[in-house]
Image (cartoon, rainbow, N blue to C red):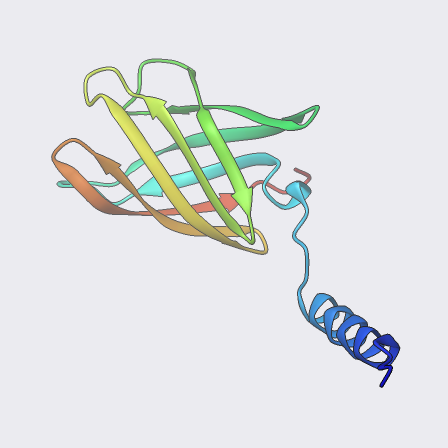
Length: 129
C-alpha cells in the first residue's frame, strides 16, 4: 500500500506559515538612536544619554551621564524581540549590565552593578532618532 505524503507536507507548510504570520519581527531600527535615561539608585536618580548605532551587522554605542567619566563604549549589545541588553565599564563601579524592553519610544528595564542589582532604568528615545 502506497501512501502519499503530499497532504501532510501541505498541512505542515500551512501551519508553519500561520505561525510565522503571527510573529512580528522587530527591526534594529527600533533600538538605534539616542536615548535619555534615568536610573533610580540609592539617594537620587542618575541621568544621562546612551546612543546605539548600526555598524554593518553589529550594534555599537556609547553612554554618558552625570555619574560617569565622559563617553564610555557599550559592549555586547544585543537586540532581539523588543529586548535589549548591553554592558559597559563604569570605572569606579566596575562593569554594569543593562537589560530592558522597548515599547515604542520607551525602554523600561534594570541595571546590575556590584552591590547594586536590579536598579530600575527608564529611557526615552529622542525625537528624530
